[in-house]
Length: 115
Image 1 (cartoon, one colour):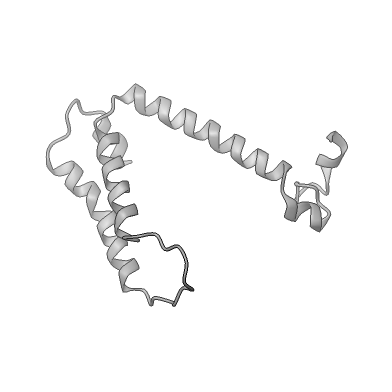
Image 2: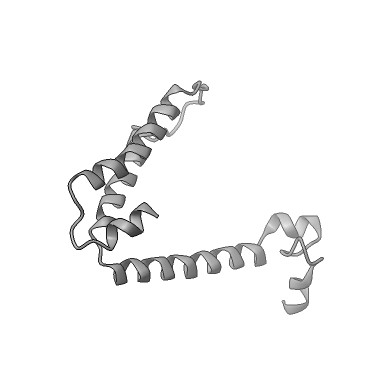
């Protein structure tokens, strides 16, 4: 809700992006405090979790600079993409096929009739 309030203002005051940066910083500090487990040799992503937190902070700042209608379009397209992603995942789930539900764990295999 803070993001929506910020976007409704023409230009956000200087302290609003600073306040939006606090949660990623706190989450990053909490992740650094967790016990680290050994990972086998291989690819390791550098600067985790600092780099993802920085990306989150930059994207939140950019979102505060968007107009209200641009933010509404972003939310609509994101929700549409999420619905397509979840529907595709349910339809093509290999784990559900192995379990005998054919992608619909709550409906008892309805997807098999349509293939």
